[in-house]
Length: 123
Image 1 (cartoon, helix red, strand yellow):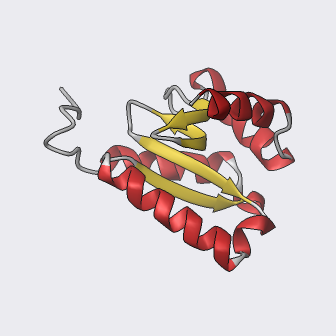
Image 2 (image 1 turned 120 degrees about the vertical axis):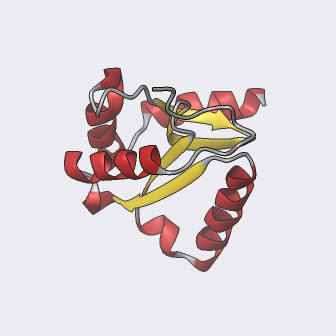
């Protein structure tokens, strides 16, 4: 786990331009008022952006994710996170925009919470 935390810190320092752009829009509750963490270690994986309240991971993908090996890893990772009732949304570097991020957050917000999560709108 310690290795993952060190790696996450390194990834924060060396973010891609698209990740920096997304973080500018997500940080400090700037996107629809939700709190996000970046390069957050979650169930053994380093997630680009994570919102605990929505149980939402947003991954910003570049060309590296186009390889068969990367696609298989990403799908497996999403499957593991789904077992914990965490939804993963993947967007391409060139798709990063305030409108796209807001659409993802709205979609996650509308999704029914898991009965075991104990979360959801409380009025």
